[in-house]
Length: 278
Ligand SMILES: CC(C)(COP(=O)(O)OP(=O)(O)OC[C@H]1O[C@@H](n2cnc3c(N)ncnc32)[C@H](O)[C@@H]1OP(=O)(O)O)[C@@H](O)C(=O)NCCC(=O)NCCSC(=O)C[C@H](O)C(=O)O
Ligand SMILES: [Mg+2]
Image (cartoon, rainbow, N blue to C red):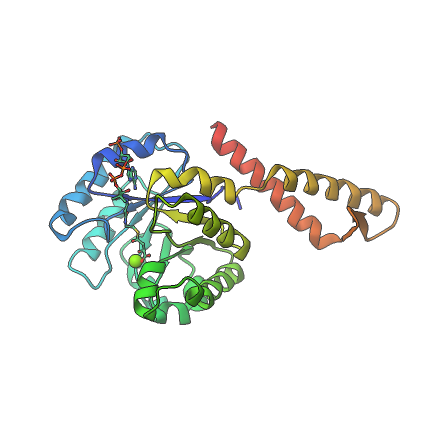
């Protein structure tokens, strides 16, 4: 992981004030939306508004991902071509059902593609979507998924979340958890962030700036994790120097595979530090 993806904020592409506010937010990823956050009447104007704001710059090292409308809508193809010309890092395609959907977008843009994973067919085809050479990330669309699965509970989405994580990890792409709709419920949001982190997601998608700090904290290594990783690396190096393949730290064995995790923890902490001080 060369950059953190702890927090990914949706920003309506039709709202210049919110797009401007994003320049000062401590968020890792901007999900610049032309789809559900924009009304049909505003769709065409939002494209120009977004292009204009991105063109002005000022977003620093935040990853800029433009969510277009589906290619089966009247706006999708024009959005894709407009996004290709925008100062953004990737294009996010909603309601991806299979690798052929990604192919269709890849014919319209040379940007990296991210996929909204939010349809039952998309979940069943997660592995082929993650394997597509243009795919760089998954964002879980838990609202659409709950609608299609006819459920109101996160528990009912667990299989889908895990299938997408498996596919993402198998193919080395980013995986971002879905949104938490009750954006004023701080306690519930924190619990869901921690659950998503423990599942293995890289970060959480957000709908309001007030959610950023909690997501950033939940998906960053804690001070305790950083210290433990440092001690594990030192103890294992010492064990290796003494001809041992196993060290013991805090009463637990440390083997080569734990060192891979420890190094990843330190690299993530380093990447966060670099992003926050740049
Ligand atoms: C949820 C909101 C409609 C609330 O808006 P509002 O009432 O204006 O909030 P506040 O008054 O508390 O706003 C305070 C200031 O923060 C700025 N703001 C608010 N939201 C954002 C944002 N998302 N990005 C940047 N800035 C934001 C306001 O402009 C205020 O600033 P200032 O005027 O300077 O004081 C609103 O938060 C919102 O529209 N959120 C985004 C909703 C959205 O994008 N929805 C679509 C994505 S979710 C989705 O589609 C999931 C997926 O597809 C699925 O299927 O699950
Ligand atoms: Mg959706």
